[in-house]
Image (cartoon, rainbow, N blue to C red; front, side, top):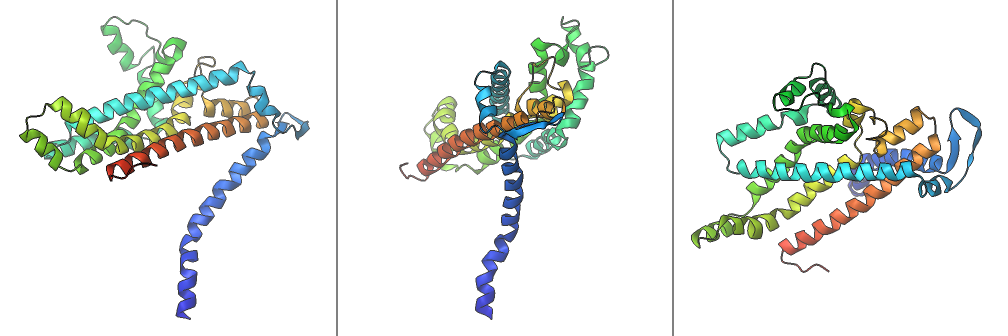
Length: 297
């Protein structure tokens, strides 16, 4: 009886993970199914399979390629800016002192605010009529700065909000990485009088690279699927200025009732995310092997 219980134990323990996987795959294959259909909620009688026609239409659709451009631009800018700021803050707080620990805790506060609420808060602060930030920029000569209501500054505004919300996430990951690095190489470099810039670029940065890639992967996956900050502030506007994948898919479904195109957009987003995450993971594994002294295959 005990042997039978032991044989069943691994299956029982893996059951929750199996159920979660099933509940993930159900909406995934549902999206695949609808992405191969011509299906508008306003024209139900035209419903039918068109197979890959929705995807083929993307190849000649200027709106789709603009969505790709905006999504990738938003992703690259947010990840790069947050990495630079997060790394800089982590280096400043690297020493484990009472002040540094308190500062790190306070800097985590934006991360505890829901992104949609943060976007609404920034929307009020950047209001051209009564926003406090609009008042501050007017003091340095930028009168009537339109923030998210102007196509030329809308992308800058939503990136500013994203950086404010998610830089603490990068900071806490890199800070944990910095504090976990072995001390022997740095002590040896200090005894030899090695310049700090050399230590940073030749010792600290290579050893920290797995943490940087991990933080970049998480932020990349979040940024390319961004919806709440952009939609709460601009609804994808002005015009179609910020119609990233998630916003465009939302508009296609709820505004244009085009279920097939909406699902196809999400599948393209999944393919891009899958490709980028695989690139990051392969590089992370290569760096981990190098750190353990194993030559990558």
